[in-house]
Length: 261
Image (tube, rainbow, N blue to C red; front, side):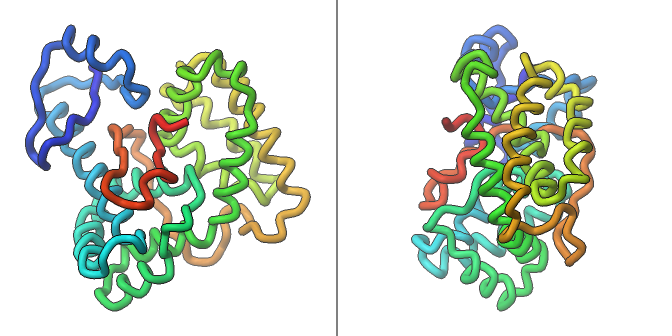
């Protein structure tokens, strides 16, 4: 089954035929395949995609210093509610771990909003992202240095990036980037069927890992892999969520986890 989030409002999705879906989705890098056994399961998948979209949108608004304070507070409160589900929490973390925060992001201000309004889940997300910011930056730089020919072309690279974010590859590697002993486990992610089915997946991961390892020689500002201080840990249930392009915020252009080159 092909699934792409078509967001209109939290509970409204357009129903289209399989042929129509294949036609309109052929240029979407964020389309993914999943096996579903019932209409109810499909509904739950779409619900998860919608909630994840909302969680990423509202949390990004809470982080954005270009957004009015009143809107940031309202967005943070809504994000806290949405982050109560593991799927949305994991989705948001994967997105934020795929790209360093832009200059328009105000992490300290967002933390103060969380403290004032007792928004523990969002505050933990912010602390985790803030803690690993240099790791995230180095992981992203290693990704950007990969030769395009490894993927086969720009379109294939975009598709691979979208899947890598959804599957948590950026988050996994950024936690390993300062610890040589932990790198080996990164290649275990090839066991993820959604990664294994991508063309040249083993070569891409090997090259990405090699480029990331070059940063371990001088990890002055990096947090050691799997840092022992309290950071957010999210269980993985192997579910892949849909597309979540951030809109209406200054943070959006730097954090476009799915599709952007």
